[in-house]
Amino acid sequence: MSHPTVDVTIVGGGPVGLFASFYAGLRSMTVRIIDSLPELGGQLTALYPEKYVYDMPGFPKVLAKDLAKDLIAQGTQFKPDIQLEQTAMELQRTGETYQILSNSGQVFPTRTVIISAGAGAFSPTKLGIDREDALHGKGLHYGVKDKSIFEGKRLIIVGGGDSAFDWCMNLEPIAKEITLVHRRDVFKAHEDSIEKVKNSTVKMRLWSSVAELHGDNALEAVTLHSGHTNEAEKVDIDHVIVNIGFKSSLGPIRTWGLEIDKMQIKVNERFETNLPGVFAVGDVATYPGKLKLIATGVGEATSAVCFAKTSLDPTAKLFPGHSSEMDLQAVTA
Image (tube, rainbow, N blue to C red; front, top):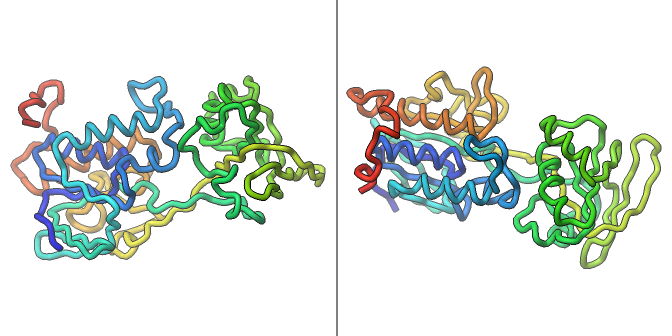
């Protein structure tokens, strides 16, 4: 099945892709969003909908699911063609346009492409111990979709990065007790988050790791192993949340002929890849001085859209003016 040709196809429906969709619509471009997930929002909705995001302009803090909701409303207001549960498998050049072939055999013609696939296909890094798969979802978690299940419970949060510290702060008001378990005494979280957790009721078990999981039909306890003393201690617990990172893969995008460096797509100052008319933005893109933040990605998306616009219409201005000077009601009518 083939679909109509659009001006730009955005591969990835996360926050950066959604903003690219909005800005392309603002620039009167026809848009298609392709995403392998069953809903828009990317990691905000798939991995940590109940987690607070603190580094978005205009929000002292905002729940990921609420941020996703607003980004979806913004990114779909110009009525893009949305194709969910479609994995972009192949990219083929046909004259002046491209065709994206999906896993379901559908063909999506497009004049330009903006890849905003985040970290690509991702899977959580596991503890690597016995019975992990058997207890997944039965007290062992790699993300939090409903934080109410932790109310009044005893939690262990494993990790030393931003996600682990964010969940400590997020769940401390409702959990009975929280213990942060980390293999080292050095953290990769923001300094402010570290200080807040240190001054909270959260206990810390440093130089420690989860060595065993106990329980038949649900998690009941864990054995903690000390890397300093080599001692083991069995601790009764209700839930363990593992936040030790994700393994990512570009998947089929790796076969598209793009220049790739350490699982990221190399772009220039216009966010162009080595393929004409193909751009990359957000966590999937790399260039000197790159910072992986949503705030950075939406700026990249804006620039990529404008450069895509001028590549299609050389008479168009690169900078269309400030949105406050535009009549958006007239544009969306």
